[in-house]
Image 1: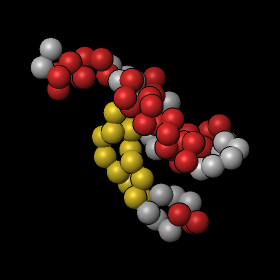
Image 2 (image 1 turned 30 degrees about the vertical axis):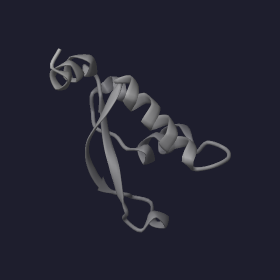
Image 3 (image 1 turned 45 degrees about the vertical axis):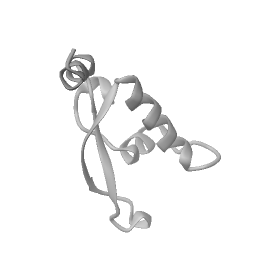
Image 4 (image 1 turned 90 degrees about the vertical axis):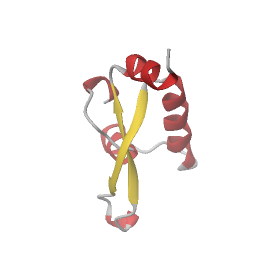
Length: 76
């Protein structure tokens, strides 16, 4: 999803590949790791689609030409 350059949420990823086994915290940890690597960045938020989430706000992420964007913010 990140390679498309289109915005996505963790909910979108779970819908695409399925929920991981174990703790639900695995997804958040994975997103944080990938964001720190510069492959994706947070670009907003939107309400969740799943009824069980009660429309809570989800982070919206975008991937793509992240290295250039990171350099702009780092001043390099």
